[in-house]
Image 1 (cartoon, rainbow, N blue to C red):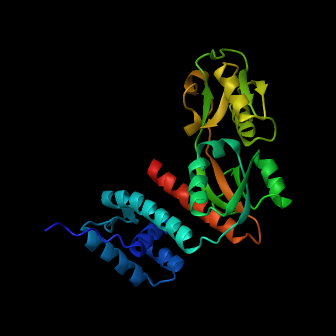
Image 2 (image 1 turned 135 degrees about the vertical axis):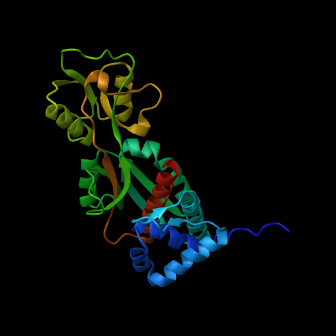
Image 3 (image 1 turned 180 degrees about the vertical axis):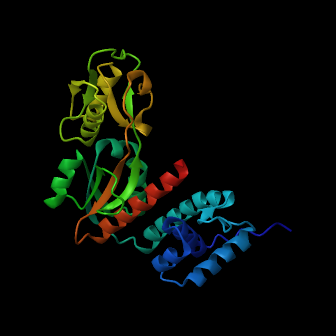
Length: 293
């Protein structure tokens, strides 16, 4: 007789993921509006059903077992698909226009699949997406130009907006660039007030390294073309340093770079369509992070 399918009850998986995200059973119970004993019982049911332990209860802090880490990845995927199905089947009437502002590089790398999935679940919603520098996006947001904005910023957690992505930054160049031995570091950067420009100049100044702006452009494509041509160094999110770029550091005696953060800001009085898109972006990027990790 074949083995029964594992009990991937969505309610159990949702409690499991909430425990991980909250860092404990007590906080998870508060977020779920349940008692701690109920949440503990749900995890016992989940573990009994799959015949594996998902949490290491012998550790001083709540930690996942290897089986728990594997299940977490699939649990996030299953919950995302379930939410998409509910959105499509139970609320097909959601419509209107949502105005989203986002940095160009983040939109290019991370958002195409996220927005495609949203559009598939909500075909009546029109998306107006604008790419710009963070300072311009926040200015437009304050003036009511956008319903949602994704902005680059120094890590702040949940102090303002919702932190949805952590960006490890690297110094990037091409093999055409000859490492400077005694002169200033040639830089290819976006104009002020770009956060990467600020980060690059502050890091070099703190390390006592002289620099010069060899090329400046407000276009991401323009910056990438100049770097590939060997005109200078730039700062990129690590995942964007693909073909045509070299991650550099020691040979150029460059200082290390701290991460930046992508945060999602919601306008007051956001429409149902806007709320749906905001929830979808947060859920989708959580899934991408877990899968990548």
